[in-house]
Amino acid sequence: MRTNQKLYLGFILSFALFLGSFSSSYADDGKSWPMFMRDARHSAISPAELEPPLDMIWSFEADASIYGSPVINGNIVFFASISGTIYAINIETAEEVWTFEADNEVISTPAIYKNRLYIGDKNGMFYCLDTSSGQLLWKFTATGKIVSSPTIYRDIIYVASNDMYLYALNPLKGSLLWKTSLSKKTSETGIYSSPAFSDDKVFVAKKAYTLYALDSSKGNVLWSFNTDSAVYSSPVIEDGMLYVGGYDRKIYAIDTKKGKLKWSVLLDEWVYASPVVYDDIVIVATKDGYIKGLKSRNGKELWSVHLGSAISSTVAVSDDGIGYIGTEYGDFVAINLEKGKILWKELVPDDGFHSSAAIADGKVFIGTMNGMLISWGKGKD
Image (cartoon, rainbow, N blue to C red; front, side, top):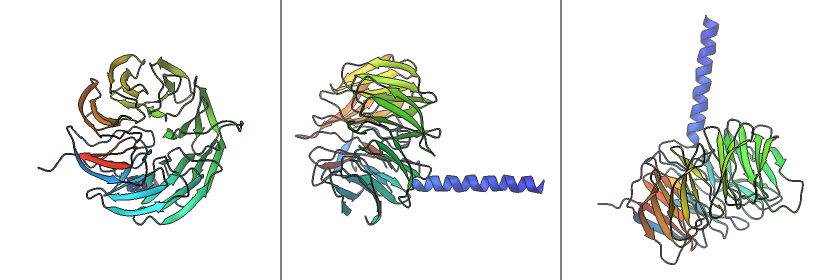
C-alpha cells in the first residue's frame, strides 16, 4: 500500500513539475502571445476578449518594414524589422527597452520560451537572446536562409531553413537534437511554412508542393502529402485534422494520423496566409481580398466577405470570436467570425500590412510595411 501511495505521489509531483515548467513558458491568461499564431498547433486564438471599435493607443517607428508578427511576454512586445533589427518595446509606453542587430534581413516571427527569444535571419543564423537585456546567449548556423518562424513545445525548438532541413534544437543550449532533410533536390527553393506540433508529431510544408509529418523526438518522416502547387501557408491543427492553403487556390483538410485527404476546396485565388479554425469554422484569406468561412467537417462555404484589397496577413482571434486582420491596402479590420460580418475597420493611410496581428492584455498589435508597430485597444475614458 505504501509503495503504491509513493508511486501515486511521485506521479502527482512529476505531473505538477511538468505543468509548472510548461506554464513558466507563458501563462494561458490572455496576457501573452509567445510565437507565430500563438501556440504550437497554430490556433491563433487568444483566451482574452477584445470587442471593437478600437483606438490606436500608440505607434512605434522601426527602421524598416515589418514582415513578421509581434510576440508578447509580460509587459514587453518583441518584433523584427526586415533590416535585421530585433526590438523589445514596453507594451504600455512604446518605449524601446533594447535592440539587437542580426547579421542579415529578418522576415519571420520570433518565439519566446523561458525568458529567451528565438529568431532566424537570411544568413541562416538562428539566435537565442535574453528577453530582459537582448544579450546573445547562443546562435546556431543553418546552411540556408531562415525565413520560417520557429515553434517551441516540450523543451524542443523546431526551425526550418531554405537548406531544406527541419532542425530540432535544445532551446537552452542551442545544441542539435536532430535534423531531417525534406528534399534530395538542390534546386528546391525552401521552406516558408512555420512548423506545427500535435500528438508527438511536427508538421511542416515545403514550398515545393509537399507537406510532411515527422516524429517529434527522432525526426523520421511518418507521412507526406502532395499539394498541386507551392505552399507558403503554415499548417493548423484542430481535432486531429490539419488545414493548410496553397498557391493552387485550394484549402486542404488532412487527417493528422495517416496523412489522408478528407476534403479540399478550390477558391477564387491563391492562399498565402495561414488558415485558422474557430468554432468548427475554417477561416481562410485569399490574395484577392476575400475572407471565407468554411465548415471544418466538409469545406462547405458558410460565408464570404471582401476586404477591398489583397491579404497576406493571417487572422488573429479573440475569445469572443472576433478576428483581426490587415490588408495590403492598409485597412485593419475586425470581423465576426460566426457570421462573416465586418464590425469595424480603420485605414492606416499610405501603408499596408504583411504582418499578422497578436492579441494580448486587452490590446492587438501589428506591424506595417512602412515599419510602424501599432497597438490598438480601448482608449482611456
